[in-house]
Amino acid sequence: MKENTDGYRIADLDVDERPRERLAKLGPSKLRNEELLAILLRVGVPGESAVQVGKRLLDNLGGLTGIYQASFKEICSQHGIGPAKAAQIQAALELGRRISESSEEEVHYIHSPEDVFKLLRYRMGALEQEEMRVVLLDTRNRVLEDVVVYRGSLNSAQVRVGEIFKHAIRRNAAAVILVHNHPSGDPNPSPDDVAVTRAIVQAGKLMDIDVLDHIVIGRGRYTSLKQRGLGFTN
Image (cartoon, rainbow, N blue to C red; front, side, top):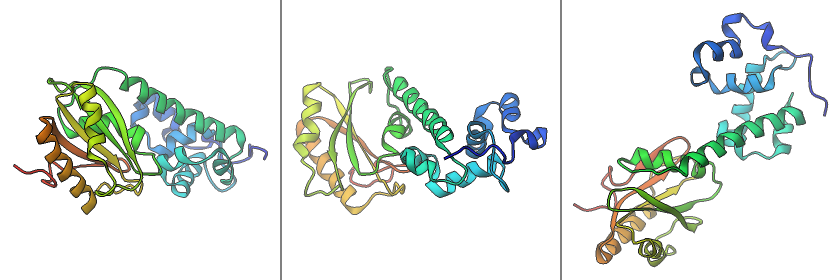
């Protein structure tokens, strides 16, 4: 597919509306997602500026997470997107993922549910199936490791409680935090989520390993079952 070079260019926009100029003046954090995509795309298509094409990509593919999950072929199938532009988009998103992974290799201390969300949001927010991880903590709430213990729809009859604590015992962890994702993007816990939490919290008391929280990660959002009083007793 030939790249479209006859569309609306960023240079055709008013200076104050050009994404590159706005980025230089305000910094990348101040730009909308479609503006950042427009910088990668450089030109639009007849009837659409690069910013409008970026907005269309976000709408059609389900936001940045959807674009990240989309295949190279799916991105190329979008009007005005050829192999070169698709490659630029995928490369940029992959660099972002690798940056998040490199930061996760640093020492982390958990002081709040938001700390857990920041630690795992990029790895878990884009998954297409449910996954449960256990974050292992020492006595100072320093992260020792996070381990995948389950994949598939979370069901209290299927999750093996022993598997949850096997890794905690191996690392001599003082406490654990449960984390799983909802591919739908909605982080509200289900009845099964609450049942699983209750069973694991009770097992942790028997093993003298504190279960500090259960975090459900959705699309850019999270829910703390501990904060909502679900599955935890005083």
